[in-house]
Length: 148
Image (cartoon, rainbow, N blue to C red; front, side, top):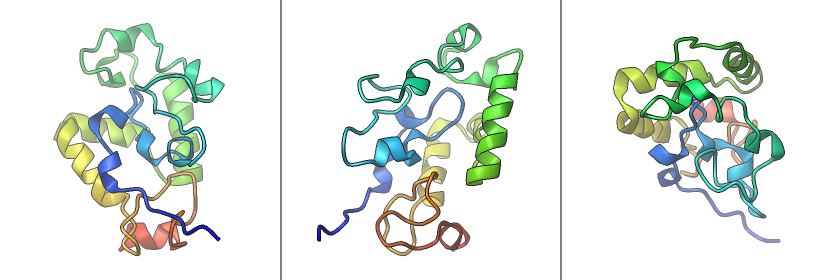
């Protein structure tokens, strides 16, 4: 049986933060071994259709923001972002709206550092996938990892 390898926290970079505040480095699509997604700001080749066609990513308002985030939008939070945030808070315990607030408050680089700390498994040092309840490498429960 093949031993699982970890995903280093250094995969979380400024480029991996989507316009909506999603940390794409934590996504199962990015962390999968076969045909990984490059994240919202990367190439569309292996992205799921819903990501390629994402209305938030292609929003005209967001395109006017020099930083490439929803933070300067006059309708923040828009209905789309509210729905996405509500789903992620309920299912995965992660809020895009809170991420956007943190980016504004801390700046992007400090936010990225904070995300590396928050999403590193204390059991094995690998990144924790937001879409999984356990670390994909060592099996430690995500709640345990976040509380540690």
